[in-house]
Amino acid sequence: MNTDVDPVATVDALLAAARLLDECASIDELAPAACRLATEVVPGVRKVELVRMLTGSRSVTLAATGEPGGSDSQALDLPLACELDALVLHLKADRPLEDTGQRIARLFAAHLAAAVQTVHTRAKATNLERALETSRDIGVAMGIIMARRACTRDEAFELLRRASRANQRKLATIAEDVADTGILEFELGSRDRDAGRLPQM
Image (cartoon, rainbow, N blue to C red; front, side):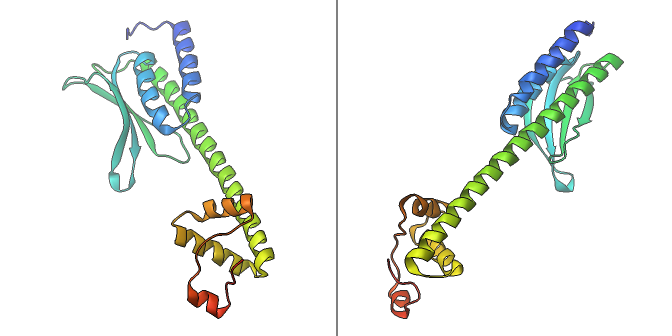
């Protein structure tokens, strides 16, 4: 990209990049988009990497794009201000970025950090919705089992757990089936039947 910066074009490019980043639904989708957009928006940059920092000074590259610089290439590392992820935007250029280029890079990194937060927030909300739905299904299934078998909550949950293990299916899936059909179907061992602890329906 030419290092002669048009302020209006730069602002428009940053806004367009921010909109595109905000539309990404996951980190897997966001990372390559961010690297590609950074090479287009930040003047003088030839290669971009988005890196996740791990414990013990380890890291993993989530995405990379652009042309590798020469042996004398200049690097700029921009840690992203994200609460839930330690990410660094790694920029490489053939020569040191001018002050304007560094400012643009930092603005882009700020937009990217906001997009990362949005992705994590959406994922957290989705997980909470799934957890609430699962909890509701388990509660309904336990109520059905308690009414049908005249057992306690602990015994009803134990039945769900045993059904999950016997059928090699997730407990949440078993609970959803019971909530939908009102039936818990799985084979009980003779020991359980003889002891009378888990009477069949």
